[in-house]
Length: 424
Image 1 (tube, rainbow, N blue to C red):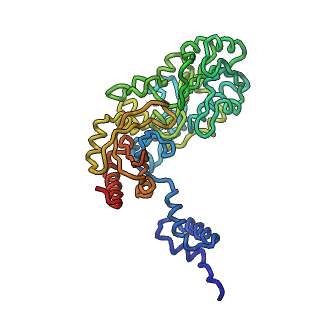
Image 2 (cartoon, rainbow, N blue to C red):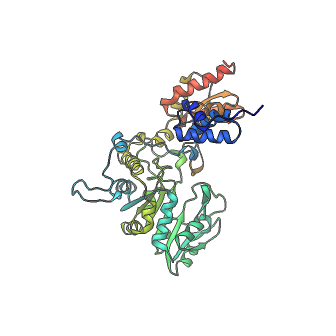
């Protein structure tokens, strides 16, 4: 008997169209299933493709700035800003072309206490542009203790090399003194670079030099503060800065101490979209804006619109309008009340973290619910997916990172799991 002929690609694709994927994707899935000799796997393959598409999830991990889940959730934007044209580079008064820095960047400069600001597509780009614009072919002095590597293999020495400047290392890994910097700036030095160790800490026998002392040496100081805390006083929070922020450098205070520029991310402690911000002296910002690399690194209108909403919330001192700060500042007592109201599992005290390469080693007291067993995969398979953590045989949903509007979804998912396991 001749072997059964496989179905045609088109017929197989049409047979799984109820998965909701566009026909070209279904054709691709069907072709792969037939090539693998298993046409019956087409539906499972299509479902796997659908799950892999970018979509919303409920973050119940307790990691507020979860890098794999998009870091900071964004403030609400006016619907018109997303579906209509905008005055991105248009002056409504004169009717002529304007700069895209006239909106979000200007507001961010005001919020950070800077003369001017420039927005690029991420924090690494911000540092690269500053070095390329201000120090190409010249020396930049950096402490050996600040030659950091962040996620994705981004290393300060490598980005300096790509920017065309010469790295001058001073001090040692754990101790760098003002005399080390003073000896190094005697030559043709364009900048002194100070890099915040935003994703690790060195403790013990250590010494470093503050921005104020470095600024007195002469060359402009560029401070890469990384996480994007705008103001150490957190005037947008009614209760003032939380204890876990202690020691985190902030843009306003760093500039006030004498830094010529600060660079930082828009999607970490600032609580906005992925972006990089350069803020500080107007003349230095202008040099960065005129550099050809700026064109390649600039963000689009949607990012700038989200940054504008974030900056306006800061200027209104409205921390509740910024989801990151609303979650980070939520009192534990309120989280426990929400956990009790779920009516499922056991209410537990938990420990959340800022995450996203911010405030390393600092815990944020929190609360949530736990059920027995490892149900992480089952929760991820829900609609919407819920990402939880498993600890000592318990699945824990930390409510600090769950929007209160999603509490019902979490409760229903956990109740279904308990019912399926024969739990109470």
